[in-house]
Image (cartoon, rainbow, N blue to C red; front, side):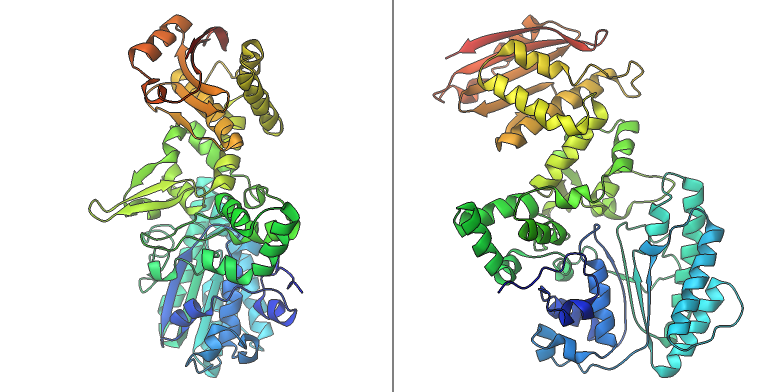
Length: 517
């Protein structure tokens, strides 16, 4: 019998007592709790199991050994001492200014105190926090668990002045932890963003950031080995339903949902939210992406004129991962921290990381939303237009092909905020990359020109676009630069396609196709 999947279950005792499937992460958790003192921070994208991790930690410090029967930590030398715990989930706070935040924070501390049979005196949120820690310390050294530490800032990120004031409240809150160090046994903070230490955590100078630690790279998320061990029965049933071998199904699952990497030598992990919904619904879809469309990120890319073609392969230093500040928002750190980019490899000689999209789900969905933002086609119809393009291309129905292509340009505004050439290059690039993703074929593009190559059974199609130029000039460039040389040994027709686009009319003004055999 299949164990029920814990979709939406973020409380460890409920998960275990109700018999849900649990991917055992306690061997990593043991490394955190075995020491006599620990103050940790971990940044991961949304829906990666951070809340469940904190709930598991609380169950351990509550001494609930019976919940861990059969798990790795049960066979370890952990002694199960009981510690009073303070847990605060900032994702539950909805605030628009610092004063409201201070009030709600003080109210939450009062609630925790009441639950622990502690009475707090008068004072602001910092005094209440100090009093709570000191009172609980009479029962043992205190554990502090903070979930989504940055949520109040992120909720106000489009209002920098308000976000900066809220940041100062958080800074004061975390400074209390440092001041009460003698009373504290363990601190663990999670979040999506990773502000530099001169920001939120400037007062918490004993904090160990394990975000990029290889030892904890697979703490949240699900590894390849865990997929095959814990989901074996689901894999068997799903493969039989689809008429696939288990090997073929696992390859498809890996393509869609694997590929997240959070350290230079870290193990790659699957997105747990997407994986659980896949096995529940037994269909491939953009589960994780659709839980939170990155509207703000896409707006930032557009307003800053960022060349989105670079997102396929970026080389960055480690400073990129923590250069996130309210006063200086940059797309790449945000995209990395929110999970739209991940580590693909690391060069120890140059000490540079290569970033790219983690998997098909993220790349396909993110490009759809980018194309929706940059073109006139609505997101819900983009998939249909792309298939129209592909079918016309396969049939060499050129009139239909270019009519469908023009749909994406019809409503582009005249007052484009970034250079017209860059803007139109972006639209062309996204259209052709998405066509390739739709058919599982590589679409090669050269970042220095507006061109693309699509290879399908019907032939190899080499495109060159000219902005305010001629189709003939585009064809001449294909021939002069030998774009088709690497394909001449392939037994397929090769098509040279020159396209001229007019910025005044915002449409394709002419095109020519030459067939090479």
